[in-house]
Length: 166
Image (cartoon, rainbow, N blue to C red; front, side, top):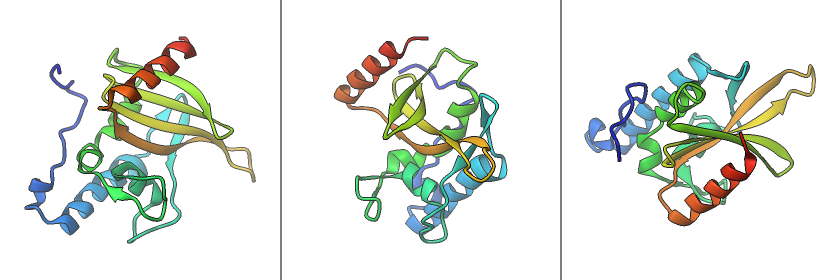
């Protein structure tokens, strides 16, 4: 793996919090809030929003989706690799068009258009295109972000990316 670009923030490690899980969750949530709520990014002229509900342990659902894994939304398992990279979510979004290290394309899942940002075929950020019903306001909603170490997943993503075109 090549050296990380200067725009990519360092990992936030559990050891940075003395191995204290509760302190760690608060630290990574603070980063999530700073990067995605307080300093809300834009992509393609649209604001990036985070799913709020259901709030669990005082934290947005969008946060839990970026730091845990599992198909059952009510019973997800924390993933330290996702936690460590919480600062990468914003960095990948705001740098998506300014570096060759990030591939981007759109797909359709569950009847919605999604924007995918794949950093060096290692880390994927997924945003869904949304329109607010009451006023037609268009925005992007953070769906998830995660590492892609499995070769089978990489093959699927490569095929999808390559068939999406420029």
